[in-house]
Image (cartoon, rainbow, N blue to C red):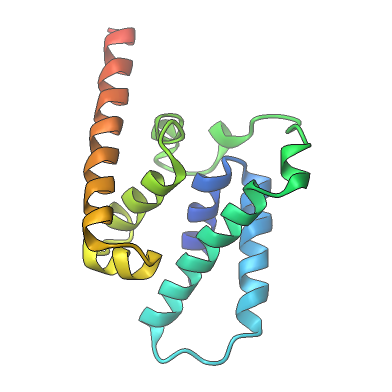
Length: 146
């Protein structure tokens, strides 16, 4: 039920389909050891938080820092919005996560703040900053092609 969401979050953080699939697998393996959740909302929030945290762990691991990807596979990701992924990857991971949760998962700023363990004002300012950065990136790209 939540595999696509977990994979999308992992992909936008890892920028590699293979790495995103590995993270998603780790997340669902961790889910197997969890007690039952109170409701679907808690389960979904747990999956989002664990996915983001697992991505951070993998990205800062010594193994990751010492490897070089064979190829950049992100442009071929089966995603209707893959055209914008290159621009999104120019944003910081925290900014991408907040944009994703706000626009794709339709969470409110308060829900995102609670889920990520951040202050409401911090999430609000990061969302505003990410919107502006993405708008600037997209506008700059339009002028390069036009």
